[in-house]
Image (tube, rainbow over the protein chains, first blue to last red):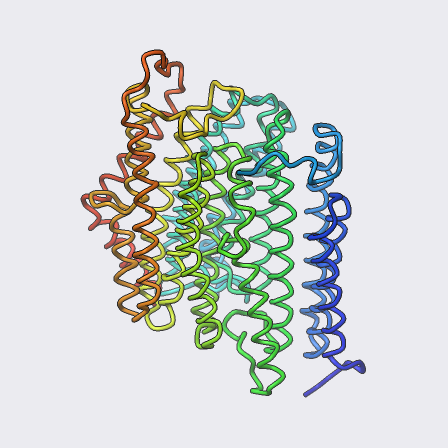
Length: 105
Length: 485
């Protein structure tokens, strides 16, 4: 197997999974919408790291290309998200997602 | 593969993208609602018709575009289904925008964009095209859900969908990265671990766990369904109709392709996990729907159950991929008609209101107050319950047939239990709509004729295909066979 990686693949994936979990817990625990979006961004970057590591295992550029795609996706998502956050601040006058909660039942 | 053939096969995508650009430039030059609406509808019709020209390029089987897309007859069938649904949403949307929204034109851009994403998915055979298609649909939908500029529920629904769908996408991406680490290829066809090492197997299994969790988020399957009722409830009904049909159908189209090309279901673990998710979704979705008093929330839970039913079509592809495709397409046709009609009724009734008329009480006596909308609501509820003479019956019959063909007895049991529970709350809608209205209840007037016409058309389709489904089934069978399954 050709490996262009001096760090073992498993270590990189452990790091990526830890980052992913930090992000996931952030989304679950944080109530401020800005921090939830930041946590989402951490999860996205964990995926990017995992792709780069996987690409390095096979010595292919595909992993890095996927990372570029992920960057583009994250940017598009955040652009829409921040627009909605501005609206949230205007209409509910809070960034706390719990206090803006009206739909349930 | 010759370049000309590729362009011909990709014609629908080019037409839709071209139309999207024309609408965008048109809106930038001068904001006119009528022009934007007409251009959008013309684009959707032209894209649908372009499939006729494109179909002759396929010859025998499929046209492969690099390693990203594999365009075949089945993909075209899905495309046409999504385009027609988008057309219905465009018609309903034009009235909704006309009466309730100040800035109207951008809605059409978002609708066309989301439709483009949903056309990408049925042809995708690579993880990159999968995630790009999925996100084009997703990101357009965030904005569509939060479109009304004053009301608060749509905004809350939009943000909820954004965060939770984002989590789903990242789970999906992480799963893809792990599958890629195990197999060395992001094409569906080569995604099984190649070297047979223990390490590769681990990566493959954990990757698939992440991947299917992400998919379950997108399809709102139990236990990843929490967001569904809130988002369906908060979004404008017109958008909910699109969200519940096209975005779900497109995800199903791509995972079916992944399951067939990647032989994912050879792995007993994946198959077991999906069976459990399917059973739980059917039962819990139907049980929770019993408790609802809001029509949109009720339909949201019912759609969770229907997604569970549809997993049977996914699970059958391992032993019989042609039957899997036939079942999926037939069920999707039925599900699209019923769901578009049900949300369409809510949407049309709410046209003149400040807030959506979506509680079950508000449709009390609808058959007498507004006969067309009432009749369509009744037909769609009966069809959702799977009662004969409607398309819902044949769709469910096919599911039973597929389940028996694959010997999936537990799933058939859950399907029977789920359908039995379902009949209770679907009939509740029917009885509420038939009930004689109170003396002081006003007749509903001033509803748009385009909206009512579309609803009547959907209702008629449900009945016609329910009484005489032979042509539809033959068409689907022929296309599936011609695509080489």
